Image (cartoon, rainbow, N blue to C red; front, side):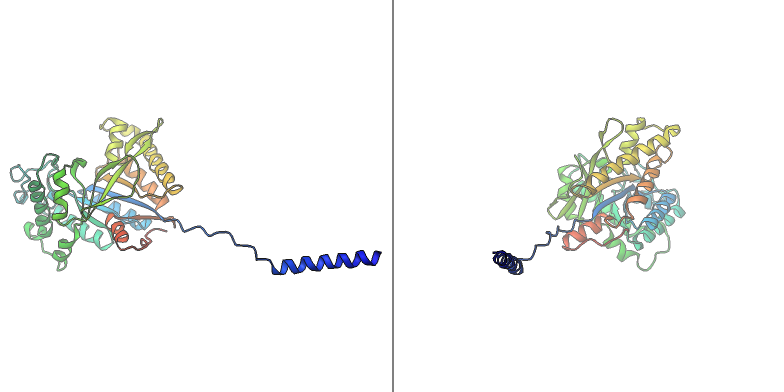
Length: 336
């Protein structure tokens, strides 16, 4: 009887082994698709002060970032050559932001533009005289854009500065992006942009980070509203808007450290929300003006120094972003 049980046990064990031998092997866990890198788009409006050109380029070199500079073309005219510009409905030589300080100042700015472009940065247009174009016609916008291109392409000759051999070809193709002064737009602007040869516009404001839609061949970027301050109230992610929020648009240098920290925390929280979420592009805007004793540039340098070097982050220009999207390519790694 004992022998029978041993035979039965042996038979059951053998059957179990045979069953396991023919069973399907365990499946490996499903591989999740790779997440896109977090894109951060950092830009500067007006682009006047030489020291801020140098400071921003140094930041880019430290972090591997590429920036977009929206240039006001009046800064390529000296006091002696200011008559070369007349805005729509304005007398010649008029501008809301002045002109270049001197022929030497213009020459130094042109050199900064050339260096920045050679380093991979994007040179865009912020129009010329920083006028509010919300009531302009299509013809007005086209006239302003014609002034932009004429002054940009011929800046050396206009000012009597020796022109580098490669300037004219570069200048003829450089300006593919635009941001309206005051972020002030109208329907006529969007009719004029494709005709004027632009590929993208960065004049919008959105409720939060979003993918830029393309309409009539123009990609439309928007500065997002981001939570800021003790009550996390939304504010446009641009230094001037923070300046108005923090100090009513007047200088309060004694509070610069507090404003720096608040700005940094707002930038970082907006970044973390996207980095850990949908990874929509995060856009941040700045000026060359050092508001509240440079609080917002100090926040930018701290922020960029931390995130632009991350392997899953790309701090790139608008131009490179749309080139990557339209080419169906993975965006080139700039940071990390």
